[in-house]
Length: 140
Image (tube, rainbow, N blue to C red):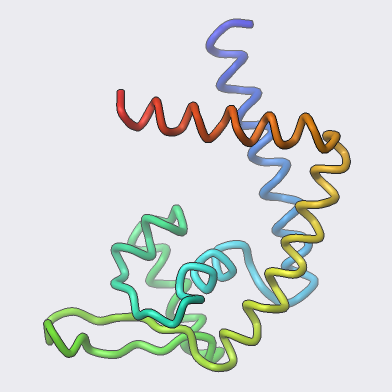
């Protein structure tokens, strides 16, 4: 397998997984991006937009649109940081926390289906190898 085949294969797998998770969440009226944002905010901590963007794998302008939508749906709240008045923090609302619980169950169910299709042992091995590659390449 050439490097081009490797990169293409990774991309195809990623697209397939994202599409499956996205469809499962769409049935709940949610998007994968919204779930990622809420999953990052799920511990009750307020987070800066830059932190959320990094975690959710979104560009800052895209995250702003996602968070604007989530504010309008009362899933998240924006508050000025008490320690740095120039900074705005985003928090999950009560409704957002409830949605996170439902959406996470949907994501876990779909992920179980994906793991089942791959085979449990192979899915665990693949996850281990991808995490190892991510750590090594981040340090390269």
